[in-house]
Length: 114
Ligand SMILES: [Zn+2]
Image 1 (cartoon, protein in one colour):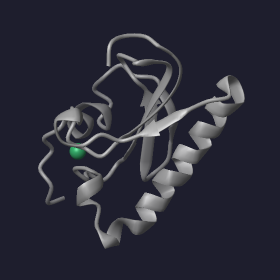
Image 2 (cartoon, protein in one colour; image 1 turned 90 degrees about the vertical axis):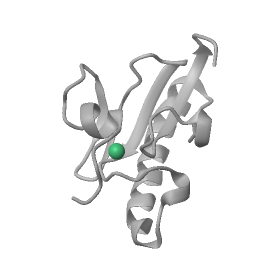
Image 3 (cartoon, protein in one colour; image 1 turned 180 degrees about the horizontal axis):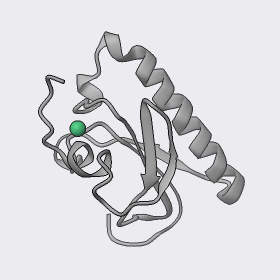
Image 4 (tube, helix red, strand yellow; image 1 turned 180 degrees about the vertical axis):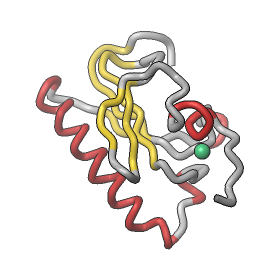
């Protein structure tokens, strides 16, 4: 590992140091219920590998990116089935609180200010 562990997801979430509810996971990607959800249903999806953001994804990450999108599709399909609508987005810069690439997948009522 050459990347320093310097973000909440690498240091806490992926090491099991936070009480979270896992939504779905495998050897490469991890999804859990947001601990302070913005939406009624709000899942955070991330790669286990440290990648800073959408903009730092590299050609070598293409297989991982496909897997992330496949997992996003699966979670979004669950939300579509239950709510008939779904948001899938990733943030950058000042909008991105944890500097580890992740997607927000949400549906239902907004629970707090953005
Ligand atoms: Zn990280």
